[in-house]
Structures are given as structure tokens and as C-alpha cells.
Length: 341
View (cartoon, rainbow, N blue to C red):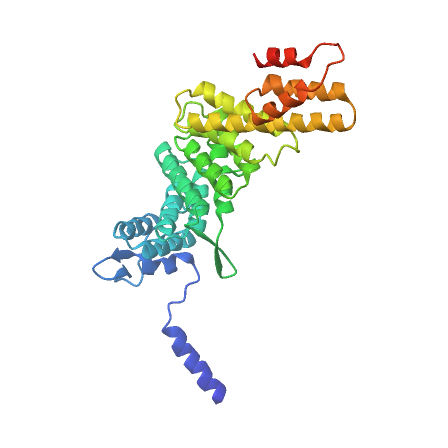
């Protein structure tokens, strides 16, 4: 008796439900969208079901009305109901889904939708729209204005922005000559520079200088390239190759932009580098003097006087040089004057 009552109750419950074993029946609730009627409106007939094209058209109406949640639910329902239809699989649908998620600030999933657009050979207009959105999403992550999700946690990930823009399959990697490719790179270079990750910034600025010499960022990129190398110099006791490299890049900037916005800073940086190189050679000269190796000391003193005659190190080197006699028998005073002239 108890089992009979439960069975009867269950049948009554099921009779009140619209059970759906095929996708098309689930589509009924997305037959029509109306702002005046509060969203999705099922058809009056219990037997009629919308087509994939009708569902997408109604979802587009919802988008145009600013109802992005409704539009997204309608588009994804259409894909579930008609998975093999043209409407479900073509680039336009994935773009619309991406747009809904982008406008709902679900940037991580929107990025994946736009990538699906690229894989479906879209027309030129749709391609450019998808690429522009990917660029925007990359910047949003890079600048900390978008968050990733993992296990219910939301967190900022600027590195994800770098990956979107310049990763192995990133936007600039695959489409290096977009009108905003150099804009993306300058933002990434600034991101690395602000984090004091100078070797990484150097690589990006180098890429900008090499690949985009005719773009608006060329001058600043060339100057910043020199600065990033300069910032990696730890002192006169370390590898001199960075000093030489920085000097070379500042000189390139001076030659290419004699009236540039940063010409005074470049000249000051070159004076600083010259002083550092002179201090290094003076220090080596003093070492050889302590080791009673005057010929080696003279070699480095001459280097200071010839290559950096206007530095503080040169003044000290000149004093040391004047008190030494070269083994050829010539007084060093004459050589000092010659090297300084």
C-alpha cells in the first residue's frame, strides 16, 4: 500500500514536468525573447519548437536589448539543442557568445570564445573584431583589471595578460603586424620595467626597435632599451660588457634622435657610463701598481686618459701618471699632454 502511494505520487510529479530526452525540446523555453515580457517567452503551442536560426536571432535580440545573461543562455542552449547545425558551429555564434561574456566581464572564458572564432576562418571584419577583443582582454589582465578563477578563488594575473599577447600562441606572436601590436609590446615592456625585471624588459624593447622602426613608439623604445641595459649594471667591479652595451644603445639613440625628448638624459647617462668605465680601469691600474707591475698599470692609466679624459677618474689617473716614468725613458708628462689634447 505504501509503495503504491509513493508510485502514484511520483507519477503525478513527473506528469507536471516537461521531461526532455532530446535537445530540441529543451529549446522551447528559448523560442522568443521579449523585453516587455521580462525575457524568454515559451511558445503558446506545446508542440512547436524553434529552429537553431530562430534561437540565435532571438538571442541576438536579447543582446541588442542589453540582456547579456539571457542572450548567453539562449546561444548556449541553441548549441546544446542543435550541436551539429551551422548556427551552432560557425564563427559568428562563438563571437556572439564571447561578446556576451566580455560584456559580463567574464574575460577568461570570453578569451577562449574569441580563440574559437579564429579557428573557424572568419571573414575579415569578424576576424578584426575578435582580434581587437583579444587585445583588450590581454591589456585588462596585464593592467590588473581582470581576474582569473581557480577553485572558486579569483585573483589578478598580469602574467596571463603577457601570455595572451606574446605567448607561444599569443596575439602579437600570431599577428605581429596589427596596428596595435606595438602598443601591446610597449605595455608589456613597461610592465616588466616597473617590476624591475630588466632583462625581460630589454627583450621586449629590443623587439620593438627591431620589428617596428616606423611606429610611434620607436623613439621611446630605443631610449628605454638603453635604460633597461643601464639598470642591469651592478657596478664597476662586474662584467664590463653591460657598460659597453648600454653605451652603444645610448649612442644609437643620440644618432637616431638628435632632437629627441630624452637627448639630455642620454648624454648624462653616457657621462655616467664613461665615469664607471674609467673607474674600472683606474682600479685595475692601482691593482697592478700594488703588484709591482708598472707596465700593466700604465696600460690601464693610458686607457683612462685616452677614452675618458674628462672624468674624475682621469684626474686621478693623470696625477698617478705624472709621478711615474715610463721604461722607454720618456717623461710621462709629455704623454699626458698628448693624450689629453
